[in-house]
Structures are given as structure tokens and as C-alpha cells.
Length: 106
Image (cartoon, rainbow, N blue to C red):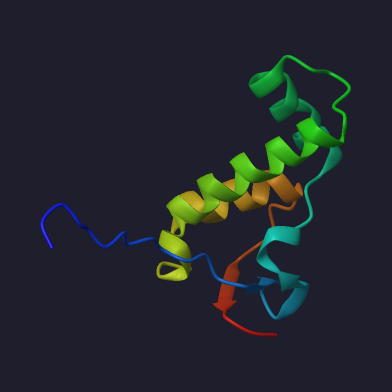
């Protein structure tokens, strides 16, 4: 079996609950986390130079944001990672976010 390597990939969590103290702000699919419009426009300009992003560019922004958040939250293994919380606060335009809980099912 020379030359054959098993590819190891980390799987992102399926569901997330985002909290502000004891108030649930969002519960749903991780890839559907709400993105504030001003954040979407800013990131579209950074990534594509597009001030009025089409659906394709919006999808690209969402994919890049999820990639960055998965990296910062270590694919759900570090839900209290301050870098991940800071990015989530920025993307949702909600400084009150205090906690994130990840799960594999709703």
C-alpha cells in the first residue's frame, strides 16, 4: 500500500446556538449563521472588489467567513475562543454575544 494516504479532514459542526448571557440569539445550522449586511458588503469589497455583491459573491463571502470561524473555533472544539467570538460579534453586528455552543444535530 505504498503511496496511499488516508486523507484526514476535520468536519465542521452542524448546528450552533449563539447566546448573549442567558438569551438565545440564534439556533440553527452553522452554515446559516446570520451575517449583517454592512459586514457582507465590507467583506465583498475586500475579497472581490464588489460593492454590490451578487449571489455568487455573497456565497463566497459566507464560505470565507465560515472557513475563518471554523479555524478560530477549532471546528467546534474551542467554543470559548476569543478570536472566534470576536469574528462572530463582528459578522452579526452584536457585541453582546457571550457564548457559542456547537452540536452535530438539532
